[in-house]
Length: 285
Image 1 (tube, rainbow, N blue to C red):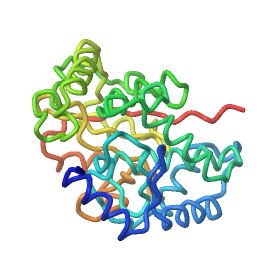
Image 2 (cartoon, rainbow, N blue to C red):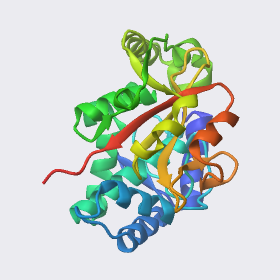
Image 3 (tube, helix red, strand yellow):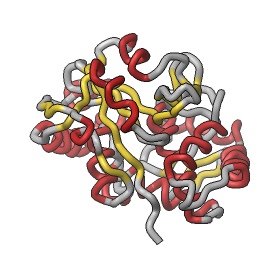
């Protein structure tokens, strides 16, 4: 007998016309949005990956914020939703499409392959725990893949040691963690993250190094919340006045560019202790 949650999920698929295979779930509109992005964003190595990322992100302005879009399916499959984005899926999709534009790639299958590589540990989708749930884990694993580089320490960031265990201590918030095997696997990742040092640039120091932050750099907001590493992320966007703003999927306005410069914006974020700055790397031939 189908569980009620599974039955509801299949009903949603039917209503929205989603396509589901063993590997991926998406709606027809997602392919339309993807094709539009590929056609409208121009990029080459002379422009650089950062500028291409910013151009891609701007094409998604006003896309609604939708939380939890990756939690809609068990077992774990690659979920594509360009119609509604949270801060992490916005970063993942923009980074994926921006990299493709740089490499002159245009096909849907390549997009799916690159998105999966970015979202999962070592690029391998192997159940719920293989997804890079914590953003510091996402940063480290994608740095190992040669896709990004954490530049926070070079900007003057200070080392921070912190216990990371929010998911493991709040399993009721994550339906998949009703599985003891999944919970144990996530707690193992949390222990590894807790044993590592993360560099964080204090928010009071951001304005002093704005000139060293580039368009398209990934900005992750470190937090004082117990058990969590990062609560929000987006891209650096330099306006004509020279100030860095945040291009991000906001819970209030969807995909937008912050009205205030990043250094000012951070002052209004509850629990924010500073930022982690990650530079996307130019795709290799």
